[in-house]
Image (cartoon, rainbow, N blue to C red; front, side, top):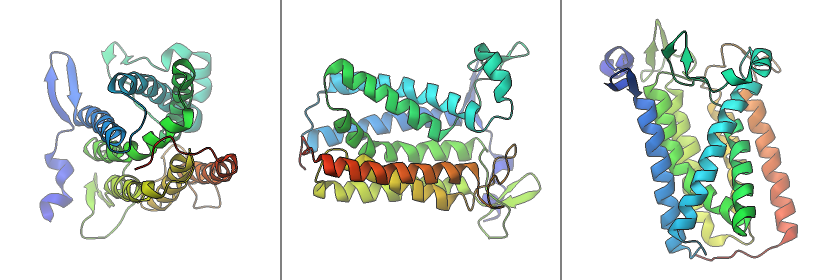
Length: 276
């Protein structure tokens, strides 16, 4: 247990270097997250008879991934970065990977911003291809949790989004403070638990869009709970009621959107295109 408690002292977040380029474990985990999500989507397409071929699926993932990257970065600037005004007047700096002449990469991404970007990317692809927007959303609801596990493990390996101070035996020393490994809690709650619930519920799906509405509610609840172990963003602290974080506030909004969407989609009553 002692090695685990001090794992950050023995672990280099940089996996390897290629000349001036430093490849972080976080980046490797991000690629694995994308590949596993795509692999899961292909599995569901085959087993649940989605009217989609591999070429369409891969084209869609390009749209979705571009939306996720743009949305995640812009969402961070709008929701979390204390220098929002600077970026609004210097928009070319938002995606600038060089600082002081050194390649540092782009740091600062927001999950909730990624959701917005993903929705826009999905809508654009559905409109371009003449396919159902809600069909794609249901497919993503099933496949994204698998990739999300690797994303949160990437946060852990990158020593970011750390947990709150604790005295539990499995805590991780971050600097001089023992903290919850909250990134792994999130990997379990937001990835494993949410994914398992949707995997088994999909056989009971009654209308198109039901799975993505349930995902929004389930993820929102899981993230809201996990935030009690995650340290609030240092630049924001607690933003409401003396205990609520920005992540929790956005999660409540996501839960509300999921519930409203569920009711609307149920009344709309469009049957599912495929049935497990």
